[in-house]
Length: 387
Image (cartoon, rainbow, N blue to C red):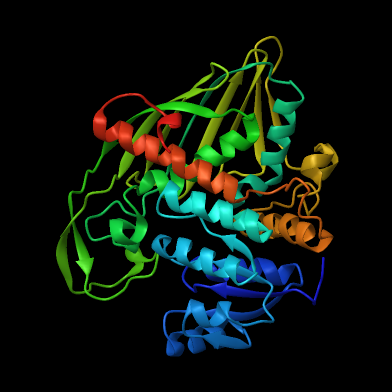
């Protein structure tokens, strides 16, 4: 897919910004400019990533009249003002999650996107493993029967040690939720996408195992803490969760449970779900993303390997390589942007999008706020309680 008439600007050059740029280039989309915090840093990153134009602020980049789409990959607290400015400037917007710091902000973005009639997307890329679409089609085709239970976890170990540090640990930068917002949001979005169920109520338990951490006196890039040599640091109290377990009630009467942790030794980035239905079950491990377990009571269980020849058409369109040729994390960005840019190029913005939008981002924030309230108040909270 190539359209040189669309020009893209990317705001943010940390861990995730280059992932966006790489995926866009694989599709032949023109990444014309990037913005970072400061002109010097922006120029250095533009040279490193071979982007022609660099801007020292998001505002400068958004003001460029030849840019059609803005990708926002900055820390969480910047998503709302940057997305708002881009929409009001007439740009289409692809924003990292969370869409905003709270559901009041995300509701405003949702309205602005509707008023400006700009394409809007949230980067829930995990939906775009081919196996994710295969699982969704199986549920939709009633191969599992009625869904009874949705269970699983998202576990990491990159914040295991008191010397591990990242801006996500600071509520003013990342928000009041940490593990739930950072990785739990992906688990909830993915299982919602696959099952079609809506979370109605939550009951949450949080724990901060490391109430004090060592904050470096200079910036540390995401996910590189355990590779860093010793740096000067200061003690910093921590008020966000290292761990959470959330019990879920769905709109159909189904039940669920999600555990998230950023302090689980040996788990690098393991999103796992199991969906139990009246007839069959599905299970998937994000560290083995080309495999789907299908469980039965009355016949042998199945183990489906990603192979376009074996996938339903809805999933096959997001598989670029033959069976036995694995597709992984970077490919999910490419496939998500395939859907987004296909939609932009089609030009009918009244059509139903086949990718996660600001509506999904707003829903994610409302569930997150219900989870936070539940953990603080020690009770079940209905998502409808969140404005």
